[in-house]
Length: 79
Picture (cartoon, one colour):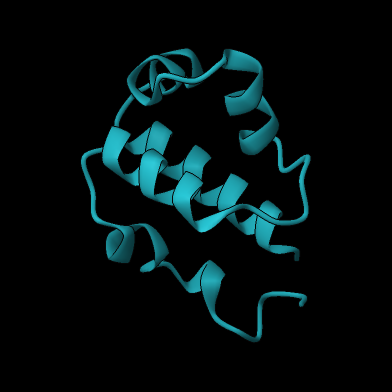
């Protein structure tokens, strides 16, 4: 799995836990909806760290909480 796919899976899991839509996440992040959809669909192989900070902030979690998921174990990711 690529980093982008792992981030997409994590975003979708967190949105589901919060009963939040991608649209609402985009509004909180202050970015275009198409960008959120691209991220949540795993359409990119890599995601910038500052983007993950913005996502985490919009979800009211720390970046450590964002990455605290087994999906980010090094054995799960392709580099």
